[in-house]
Image (cartoon, rainbow, N blue to C red):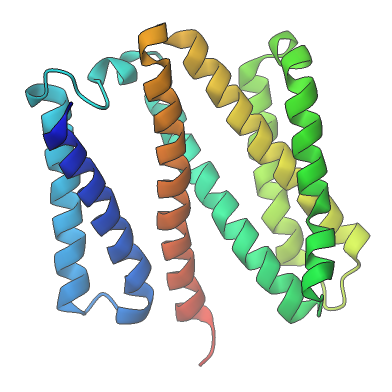
Length: 227
């Protein structure tokens, strides 16, 4: 067991994410936020050193990132999953506060995401191997641009079918294609012994990306919203 790596990774990720999230309210001139941000960054750097040069059986073996395109894929997944978190939170807020939807109506408006996820997951195994993974990632990237953009350009009193429905469809295409392609790429590029680690890495990127990107989104929200 890589106890040292686990200690540095868990504490570093937690403290770094907390510093980003809390900075929206405590501000960057707060000594506590600055200290936590520096501490979290140092712990993550220490984790990189431990995993790469100290641990005999690291939690995140360096060989994982020697696979071609693995590092840029991980960076892309971090921001893609972060976009998902921002979309889910602020789309919900927009539909309730701006469009005046009730909680049950918001649930109904999110239905295309649930149905789209079921459909893509069901037929994915049949068609994904017939299409280029690069092409699928381009489609997912475009979908992730369109999903929040439709909310951004929606006028006051926007129609659900003209803006919210296509945004939900784009969101489910973006997240489900990304998740499926990433899993297929990692499981087909790594030996069996590392496929469990790859799955854990995807989940780490999912939750860490959402936490950090939501923190930055909250900073933008507070700095741009009139008090």
